[in-house]
Image 1 (cartoon, rainbow, N blue to C red):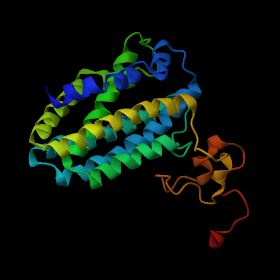
Image 2 (image 1 turned 90 degrees about the vertical axis):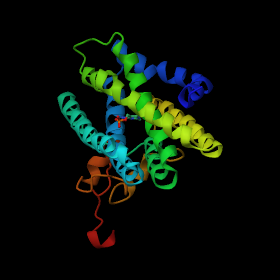
Image 3 (image 1 turned 30 degrees about the horizontal axis):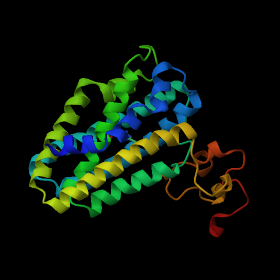
Length: 259
Ligand code: MP5
């Protein structure tokens, strides 16, 4: 049995959790609230942004025949960021309106740590599982989404033929890497496959619940410079925390030298 078929059989309940997630069902039937969709928009924008250094870290470790495909992914991700920006502007959402939620932050760290500390085949497994999960997720939304929905361009992006071809290409390459791997590496690849699916479920869950950070109230926003992880260094900190209420960091009397 192929590596992917074997994992899909083992992790079938996780795939079901993804396909049946209420975020997707509500997006498809139009009942999702604008605020909930905005949570996902902002968080996934941060995720896609972080996916660029993830791919970039894979390129020098990749077999030469993967170079052009991976470079193409970087270009596609930049295009995807523009899609987020265009859609957000259309519905009046400030994409820099929130720092990463706990799950988004964790998933991003997982991606980067995988790219830098695991074997190429292991990191490629994460790439495949994440891309496949989005393809499968947006296929669910496609079945019945109002063609005039503002979210249709996301369906076209991830559920379209081009993305289907890309996921299928990644799957073929992953099979070759799995075949070349020894039993220990293959087992680690399987575990990363599972972990990626868990993160994918957690990501939808984060959007639906508008998750914050565990164990703290919103006042963690009091750091004068805003979040250290804000990827847009030019963004005013008060904008980065604007979803957290009236009192934003950087609006008190703290001088630059005290920071
Ligand atoms: C993808 C994504 C797909 N945008 N967000 C999550 C949480 N998982 C997977 O990746 P890409 O890089 O947008 O195609």
